Length: 144
Image (cartoon, rainbow, N blue to C red):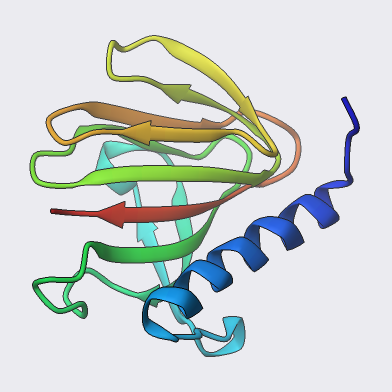
């Protein structure tokens, strides 16, 4: 299997997401204009979750499935606590760094650049940055 660099991988993922957004609504969210926010102890986790949001959950129309999309960063040792999604689904696309994803069954699963995680409505998950560099990931929250 051919491997590509993390930079190339991140570029491909970003291009795919932009192509998807462009095809469905012709919306483009330049990174430099994204909404910046920090969440301390997100979902009962440790440290600070740093975010750059194209839009937040209060912004989409009711009939739009994607409710939030963002670039998120956890510093080494920081985490998002184990929490349940009662009305939406959540996908993490790991861009760089390493971590531990706690799945719907509470099982710890190592994650790295290029991995994709999904939690469905009614399921729980969490994420911790375990490496020596920040864990960077794209987060897409959707609701039917």
